Length: 119
Length: 111
View (cartoon, rainbow over the protein chains, first blue to last red):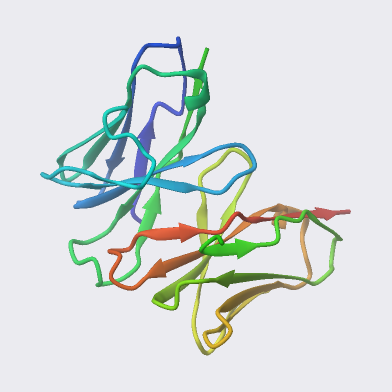
């Protein structure tokens, strides 16, 4: 099946710094990728929808200037957490949809996730 | 009210037991339904899709009741390896494959 790779799997950064997380579709083109955040013992919450070649669509309550998303190619989307704070510590997961047609099916693949700890 | 609601559990069952999870969703425009499995500190993985007619995959049976807007997952002959969190997931029509996740139900199968 399709593979989505996320990097890094774990990162520790200092408060106030920025950290970038990459999400790559390895054997397919993904015009749309999704970024989720999951706090301990909670469900995945969609942060934003990343569209190749255009601006990301952010969910209500997610600061677009803090969580910068770039989807410059059909196989790569990046999430940059800027000016990180300890409360940003969480599990960040991306997913990618196979195929360009949003209604052609429901084949969604997840990356392995990235654990961010801000100290 | 959450869009997708699940009993968080945990459900503690012995090996070999049958266990059932339910999930309710609030958006009547929901068109596709799934159960995902998430192991501790890992990404979710698709367990099975849920079809209106109900569907079975080995020890797992999923059912959908559109009128009542609930989805169920039945696990028969539980194995230790079934211990995980089970996420009820809904795709809303026209939302471009954006998935809405329930909070998950934690299952612990014990010897």
